[in-house]
Image (cartoon, rainbow, N blue to C red; front, side):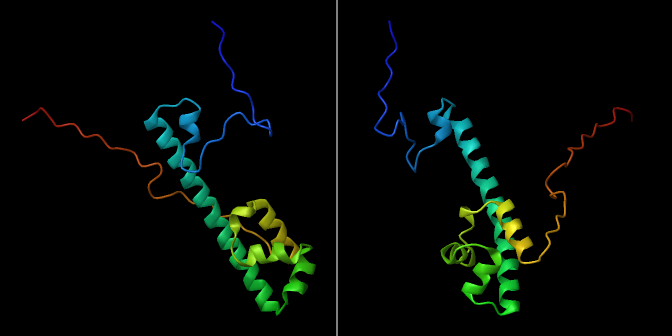
Length: 134
């Protein structure tokens, strides 16, 4: 028996996962595995967005320190005013970390990266054995 293939819509898209759906489930992973993968991805995105928020805050502080108007800041950064508005309103999901680094460099700022181990990472479980000797 031949397998049936759904016809694509006008955009050529065969399937769209709804906003409340789980793309990993749609790809055939079990419910529990899909839930874990989705939670991991959401956590990683939140971490990246927090990094971008810290960077954008530094960028905003520098703009303020220099007393730049929105137009002046947009010119220094070589971006449009609407793009600057997205940045100053912390719409960090619209930008990559690399892009924000580039903007900071255009403002004459440097980015330093500090690598630290999370307190929960790398902990070893220590097994103890009861002595059988009296």
